[in-house]
Amino acid sequence: MKKLQGKVISLKTKDTAIVKVDRKWAHPLYQKLVKRSKKYTCDFDGKLVDVALADLVEIEETRPLSRTKRFKVTKKIGK
Image 1 (cartoon, one colour):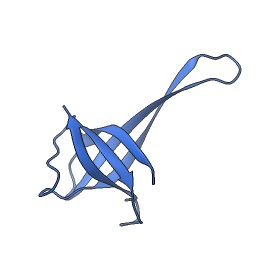
Image 2 (cartoon, one colour; image 1 turned 90 degrees about the horizontal axis):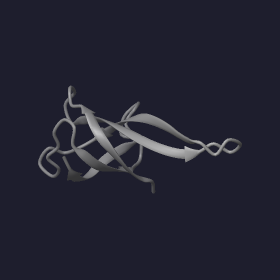
Image 3 (cartoon, one colour; image 1 turned 120 degrees about the horizontal axis):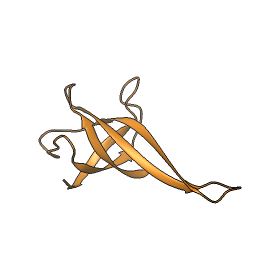
Image 4 (spheres, one colour; image 1 turned 30 degrees about the vertical axis):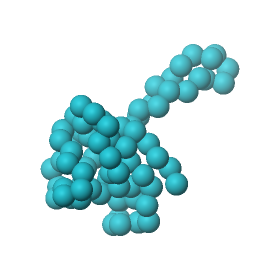
């Protein structure tokens, strides 16, 4: 299962967090570092994991929970 680290950018819906994951990779021809980001809709339980806006969290791939949710927040890493 995939485990990714990202930053919480939205908590507007109930039990759902939008997490932005940044990654860097080297361009195959020019060898310049290219930065790409992607937003993931993640499920979280407020009792188990207490997250706030701009927190650094770890997310893990799960079975489809809704039309857009395929990840869940496993732990809070820091601010």
